[in-house]
Structures are given as structure tokens and as C-alpha cells.
Image (tube, helix red, strand yellow):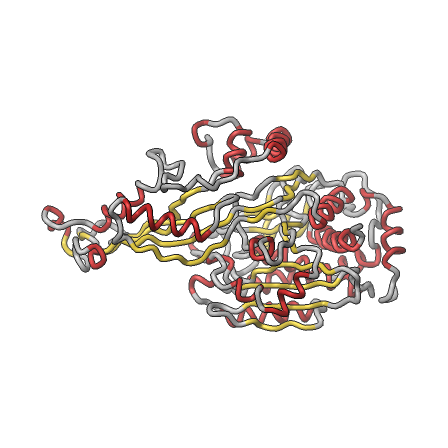
Length: 508
């Protein structure tokens, strides 16, 4: 067993001499045995069953912010997971909404790395799943291997638990992590983080974060060829509801009435449809909210270059198959579609609810109609700007009665390609023999703006090996036993997080 005070430089030099292909012997063809950090690998292999069970047990406790389900229990569980993984302290942080968790691991290192976790998950309908969404059943996924199926498997409990597995393996191997680690976790990511700022801006937490090299969120996005994207930013988001009602409008019924009265009574449902149509162009593809694009920053030449490389190296057919689509908007070529994905803000209808939606018909004229929307934002838009312009747009077009109920949201993020956290990720992927493509902007969102914006101004991103898919959808999964030589299983993904810590420690 390695002594807990193993010299970091010796550990790094020994690893480097073994060669990049040795880090993930099952993930890289023609790899040698042993690999980087042999003591830690041995511990990770011994812990494999416990690491898988940790994910399954966590999946079995769903914390769903939108339903106020198991939120205190979820925070307590998150705290326990952190302490069990070796954090010196962990505390539950109350907010005006659901609580978060803050944990500190002081390893006496000169550098500190922060990691973001979410313990909440999306809602689910068990009827839509092939196996119970909380059972964590292991099934075969063609092209990848054996995977855990369950709500939160890849978004985000599988990758997060694998990062914790790396800490377990290092401790069991007698190896002290080469950086100090700050863990900031929330329970409201899936409702657009309405109170997360209260956690990040607590003075002692903010002061600790200011001293870090950056922050990352664990992720497992290797494709079938083993490639990954390194995101240099993410879109911002505003989640909201538009509500039309007879009560607010002063027209139409105050409650549902018989549909025969439509001949003489206004309809709040049609009122909402008309308001929605004003928000976008006739094809529904481009926001038409007045002033929406005045602060949108066009793609830079470097961003277009990165997108062109992604289009050349990626598989358009595979992406279409994965998404279940036959065509892109306006039948755009793949590169132009990717440019649009990175550069365009969106107005999306998540759901429409009005009147009766059960079996058969029910002849009513609804007194209330609701549309659930998300607005994706790009640099240099802000959440505040988006909300203000949406209200002004509706008012100017005579829809002042339409209520806007904002659930949460945050600004877009941007991180420099040259930043320490991005360069550490790229170095880790290179040493693993993994093809990493720089991506200007993730079209999805996470509350990274809480870290990248002043006063913190930290670099932030996603990192991880392995594969999973189905976030927010039925049959979400996370691969634990990879049969694909290019894709990491749980043990190799664990070693990836270990190596990232060493790459951050070696910066400069």
C-alpha cells in the first residue's frame, strides 16, 4: 500500500513513464496492463461492486424539486455521500427553496479544484419505462455494454457517483488527492436553479471558490467511437409558464363551461395560442420577440472553426438516429445546423395544458390555459433582459393579461480555451487516448454562470469518461461494464477523474 504522503511529483512521473495508452486498458486498444496509478486502479477494481451499488442506491431515492419530493432526504443523502467519500466537512445549506450541500476536502495542497453536483432529478412516468425507473436494473446496451437504467442514471448521479468512487479508490490506496476539493451541490437544477445563487454567494463559500482553479460538473458523454466534446460554454435558460385565464383577461369564463357557449363566449385557450404565435416566426423556428437579437453575439471565427471540425469528425447520421429526426431546420447542411445549435437563442414550448386531456372527449370551454416554456440564451443575453423583453413584447401586442410565472433561470456561460480547467481536461483525454473535440457552446444549460460571472469569474466546464444517455427521457442509462474498446466503463471512468486531479495539480 502506498504511503498516504506519497510524493506527488514521483507519482506523476511514474505515471507518465507508463505511457498514455496504459491509463484505460479496457478503453484503449493494444493497451498494456498496469497503467497510470496502479495502486489506485487496484483499489478501484476492488471497489467496483460497491461503486455500482452506490449509483443504484442513489437512484432509488429520487429527489424531484418540481414535485417537492424527498428534498430534505436528498440533501441529507448528498451530505452523507460526501462524508463517506472522505470530505472533511459537509453541511446542508438552507435556501428560500430547497437546500444545497457544501463540502470541503483540505489535502494541504497548493491548488484547489471545485466540483458542482446536483442531487435532484427530473420527473418520470413508470408506464413509459421498460424497467422500473428507481430499480437501477442492469441491462445490455448494444454497442456499449451493460448499463444501469434509472432516473438520474446519467443526469447526473452516475457520473457524480463515479467521481466519488475516485476519491474512495484514492483513500483505499493510501493516496492523498493532489488538490484540495470543494463540493457545491444543489437540489434545484432541474427547475432552473432559482435559489442556487444563495448558496454560491454565502461569503465563506464564495471566498473559498475564489481561491480555486475552476469548477467542473461530472459528465459521461463518450459517443460510440469514444469521442467527447470539451465545452467552452453553455446556453443560459429561463423556465416559465404563460397563463391565460378568463379571470385575468376579463373575457371568457372564470371556470370551465359547456363548449356550446363558444358561440358567444371568448376562449382563454385560443387567447394563449395567439400570444404564443406572436413569440416566433411562422415556422416556429426563430424568436420574434421584439429586441430579442439586439445583444446576441455572433460566432467568432475561432468558434466557426471548431464547429467545422466537429462537423467533419462527427457522424450526422448517427446524431439524427440518436435524436430520432430525419431533417434539420430548413434542411440545413450539418455544419450550418451545428452553427445554429451553438449560436441561436430559442423559444421552446415544453408543454401545453388546457381543459380536459383524458380519454375520449369532454365538451368544455376551458377557463384557463397554460404553456410551459423554456428560453435558451446565448452570449451576450441575460436572464433579466429576456424576462423584461418578453413582458414588453406581450404588453405591446395587447396581451397584458397573459401572466408570466418564472420558475428559474440563469445567464449563459463562457470559458476561455486557454483556461486551466480546459487545458487539464484536454491533457487527461490525450493521456487516455480519447479524441476530444472543442465545442464552443453546449446547447443545454447548467447554472455555471453562478461561477463564471463576476465576482467569481471562474473557468467552468464538464468532464468525464464513459457513456450514458436518455437524460429527462424514459430508460435513461449509464454504462458500467463497457464492451466497447473505445468507451470507458466505471473503473476506467474512475481513473479518469483521478488523472484530472493530477492534471490540475500540475498546472503551470
